[in-house]
Length: 364
Length: 75
Image (tube, rainbow over all chains, first blue to last red; front, side):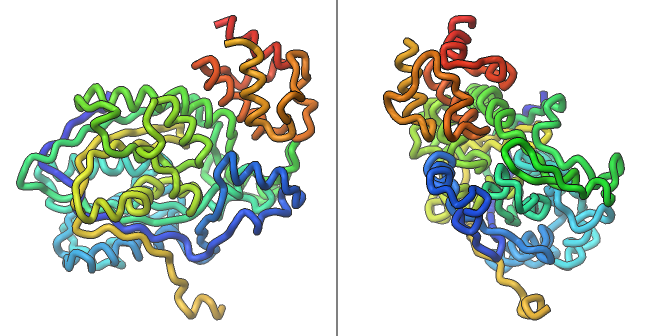
């Protein structure tokens, strides 16, 4: 099992850039036949409030570049100081080359920097952090830039009410660097490929290339519309998967690190939605105030960006000033889940901003 | 946990099932706002009441609330 402890590596800074357009549940009221009871249920039970989305033309790469530039400027760090760049995304600009190479060029990083993508979603930031920490701890790198982000909303059918109200778009940048003093962190990664069908875009890859046929829309029993080119999510299976695997993952992390529910300051889970997170908090018997879900309510489910976004959004103020013991855990598409327990902060930079559309793209 | 407590939990959480409207023999799929989100709420209520999960397939085989409650004893 890929369990690991790292000693001389730490997170120095995190920046998040959310999608430029804010949508609220009221904007999607027509999907629920303007039924006030059904809309109220989405708001109060699932915790759907607002979402920040990226319209077509704004990509994960743009959002991550924005976050990375803010982080580097915040630390007054020259591009030459970076010797590794990892992008975590399932919504890249191209099949080839990968986002990390494109951003390596855009950010003007030196040729001595390694660049590659990790194709993983909701668990992806933890996977990427594991790899980045290993690259630094092994002595190969001094500073690695980890850019996790997704624009999942662009693959969702606007008439699929089971998913459209849940998701948002964001890009994040996390700087991992060598530490002069011991900064122990613990990691554990898991997967269950048998459950791959629960969250899936069936067409558009090499197995089933996108075509006129895969773009044909179908209406399901509850009136939601989607094609084979769109994201499908089986909410019941994903809920069961989360409550089946995550409590064990949390316990494993606590046992491995010697921590307890009491000694951890905050449990920052993948911001799926309030319904899943509040049930998870009950299951692991953590006080609700230690399990933030405000990021999901305000920005939507941001896939690979959600854990760092929650660190900036829910804990940013504290993390700029002090250090906290934080258990982070991402879970979802794959199926895949990964957890880590670390001492975080005080961070030299920690910010969350909304992407501003370049004025020329507004005109076109 | 008794079936009355399970029913109370469902009435608190399922939209369109106001307190006092559900009975053991209620066919839950015939409730006015029954959909996949109501099914999700039922899975969560079962987990909260009995401390264990039921699979989507197990729920699919149930017709009444009594059927769901019986799954707890089958554990």
